[in-house]
Amino acid sequence: MDRGSRRPSHRPGAGPSRPSLAPRPALTRKLRYSCGDPVRALGAAIVSRVRIASWNVNSVRVHSVYVPNGRTPGSDHYRYKLNWLAALRDVVGAGPEAVIVCGDMNIAPTDVDVFDPLAYAGQTHVTPPERAALAELQALGLRDVVRDRWPGERVFTYWDYRAGMFHKDLGMRIDLALASAPVAGRVRAAWVDRHARKGTGPSDHAPVIVDLDEAPDGDIGPVVPPPSALPVRPGTAKLPQSP
Image (cartoon, rainbow, N blue to C red; front, side, top):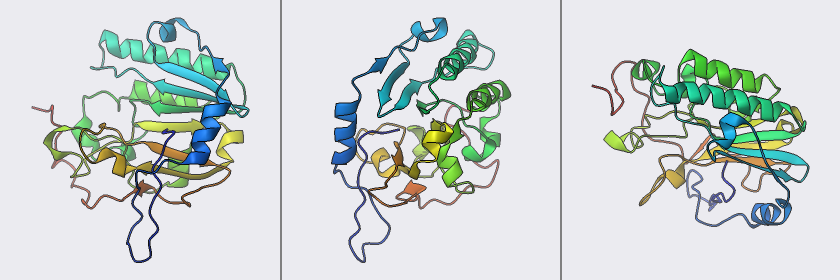
């Protein structure tokens, strides 16, 4: 989840909304002055790597996470990822009730969240144990607020730098915002700022924007601006690392 989103332009006749580079002052102020109570998320599998930062923000516990990649199914890195997720579940389960877990989860929740499940056969991010670990975290009562708001839409947050994957819209949705009921009920907009993935030297991820209580940009989404590339037929596109 990005804290400094880009506000879309609403010029008459301009066509689809396109984010500009202007920050959102209200949200910036809220974070600047309300994050003074850092929370230390302790646990053996978490402390060994700096992959989580937690704050209390206006009565909501915010966990910003960077889940381990896992590299190769069955490897030590993969087992570490599963153990890390189990430790994260313990941390979140300890409370409080109003909580949101957001960031790079390095897991696509379902096959709908990748451009082609066949392309990811044998890869991490889509294996049953990873998805089961994510489901156990969500079983604490966490809602996937982007998918809840856009249940049938094609939504990606990550595209490999190589092979023109971004321009072909061959991506996956692995950056999530998972919120408990008291927080999910306050969501007014949830969308992906695809414009931030463009330009010179961008990240290979796009920010996920979640607005609570009010939506300064309106209830836009799911991806702004929407991709122009059409979905590919299953089995016709490969990952850059595939033989």
